[in-house]
Length: 149
Image (cartoon, rainbow, N blue to C red):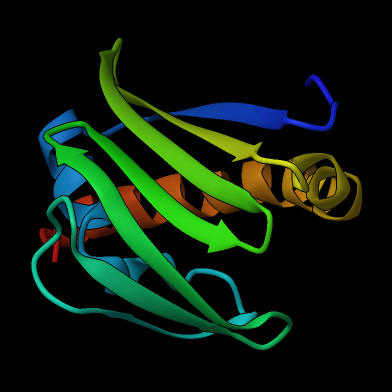
């Protein structure tokens, strides 16, 4: 996890006992993103495709505006502009033995990336693995219940 003034990144993966198509369909329905009690609401202004914008309302961070920069089956990039930096959350869904492997790579780039990384990096590094474990459990629960959306 390199820390400097221009870039910072963190990556975590989980194995999930469901297929890539099922996990992808579940995850691209953004109402499923509210697995954290800090999230009050999530809204998207259209289909889950490149260029679509959304807003997350968080108890701790308030209003967070984001945009889908890339979306193709099994890969998405969510961008959140910050003053002096760009936050990117890069998601990949790949086939793995017994299901799929879901990876989230979070990057911060820009002149203030180092400052944001110092402040929020430890929170993200602690929270992302827990959030991804919750996501995998939710996907598996939905599959057992026979639903993806």
